[in-house]
Image 1 (cartoon, helix red, strand yellow):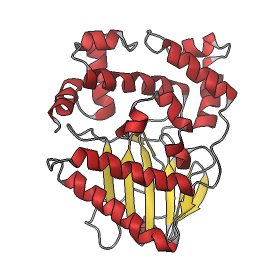
Image 2: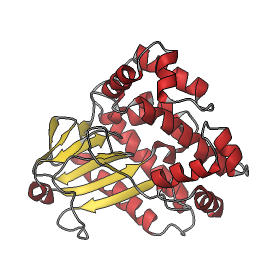
Image 3: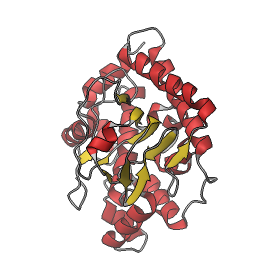
Length: 293
């Protein structure tokens, strides 16, 4: 939950699969429960492609129309509200939710560098939407349909590679729709990220990061939230949990060692934080990663 009480939705990590979820919405989709007409945020990235649209939604106070051919990017932590569920029900299209480390090119770098990676250009501050040319819309629909097909049969040979390849293709196409070139990194945000990168393996808090840079925790948290869409503590947590997942995937180190090397108190605390964030224990997540084809 955000400080103002806005609920934050999370997705349960499925063992053996990349953190990618595809949803078909609209008249010819399997009926699903639409989000209630209230404010909410996600702890994952969401890309929405409209085949047909009618209505609008609000992202961080800015109203966005829902029209055919539009692509909307919603970064983690951005507060979203639907202006009307009945209007949204008249839209048809696809959405893909994912965490950046589902993409090999992003999994190999620090999450603190995701903000300015070309593949995530659509998610950069000040971007958020683009429009697909009419001649390309059938191809976009086919990408999402194929992605949904691979996710529905994860035991099929090569499914995991197909999922990550298709998601990468969609992100490349979305980045090409971003109306502006990548923005110059914000100097203060870069200092914050450098400090997190240097200290996240130690048991430091967001307040420690702020004080090391000469700011009060409240002020720096507010500034980072305004400039990146996520508060300081979320970036520190993201960096730690990404490293936890990397160590679980690539090493056989016991959980107490993983906790000690990622700034967490102990194995019990690691398990609690991991399960709260991903809906699965780190032990089960590790087994799922090892069991994948």
